[in-house]
Length: 318
Image (cartoon, rainbow, N blue to C red; front, side, top):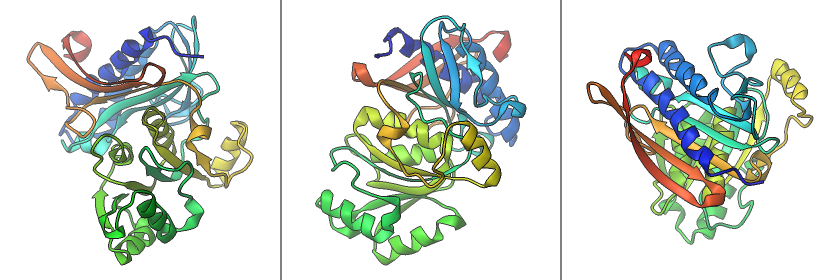
């Protein structure tokens, strides 16, 4: 079933409210306040939409308010049933330190069409469009995956550009890439922007190779599906997370999820800039107004657009 096009602007407004809320805390060194600043207005806006929305990928469990928690029901509870993958503030550190690539983001699909999993880490490989299906595999190892990608893209290995989240846990990936003389572009946080750097007419990178957030992986899958990109992910679960995963219907804890298993059918994706970034410009405070920019996708409508909207300030955002 296709998602009615009228919902795109409604979800755009939800992420834009989140972005405005978070923007009050840019450069104020308080990640928690910035996160809450995004969550509250985003939740308020989502609850105005005529839908039965359920958060299947969020940033916490029910007892971890003010987060938009897994299982939370959103909307008027009248209308179509949607699954929601959400990160009200991707880049809390970036916001707190006034650095690029913080944004408010969500992906929407029909009920049952988004992977439902606990908030945990996920190994992931991401590549762009126009490549053989299921080209890469997490179990191949870095060397084989890079060789397969270079061959498929008709590039020298030394011309391959890899984006990696700079963490100690990625030392084995970095070491292999360096041995192969691959060009490495590091990011310090915010793996949605890193993962989506492989798409577009002139992508910055050929591959994203990192372990980051599971919620972010599913959100990325939503955007990639609109471009024909690919992702393979595997959840990394401790014993407590395995119990929670079982409650969500996950039985194979070592399963590798390809894009068609993370997102099925139609999807809407919205990312509204908090600080300036690769996906969207940051919120501009124009005195008595806010200017907000959103990168938005609607798969079935072939919509790939960047919107800029102006909102008058009101008490909630004084």
